[in-house]
Length: 230
Image (cartoon, rainbow, N blue to C red; front, side, top):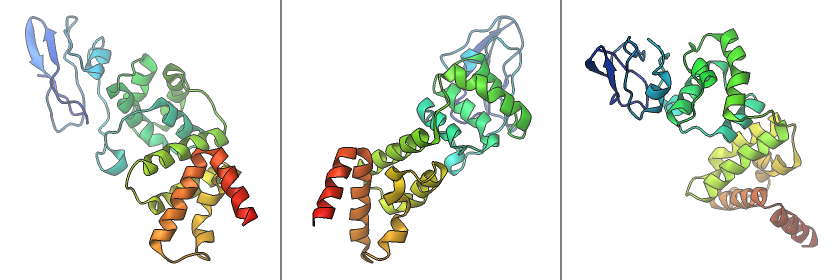
């Protein structure tokens, strides 16, 4: 019997080895194993399908709590977070696992996914070819910060999320990108807002207006002109 202990993998893969069927299932080892043998028939699971040509593979255990749990993978977000060095080295194998689960396949993604979180040098060596395989490129810190900030702004404006809770994130992006003008209002919102209003609703309204301006440079210019004319 082969064992599977991987977040997001439901243990439904069927394998064929030496004329006997085996099933992928959970164990306490925190490892993902494929049965030995040249003949295997894999399910539609992308991880099983990609690992099918190997005899045995072990994926490191992933901590499933908070933001370190299973998450959807987006190459554009990954590209921007790498540019700003927002991803700790030890998390990269888990992100590679997310990429596999999302259907991105390739030997370099697999290479990253099977590394232990403490394999610092190996992770550093595996990152560039993995990025090439994902179609990611090197981008400027400004482009990266604006991409992540606008993604966050869109999510907030399309939901009932409290925008004030994301202000530390916008400040971090502003600082990482060298205090770019587009993020100054949000990055220094708490510093400036203390002189304007103590009303939480008014502060949320102003913050949402800043988010709208981040998404629309034309709106930002128009509102700035209106404030100067007032």
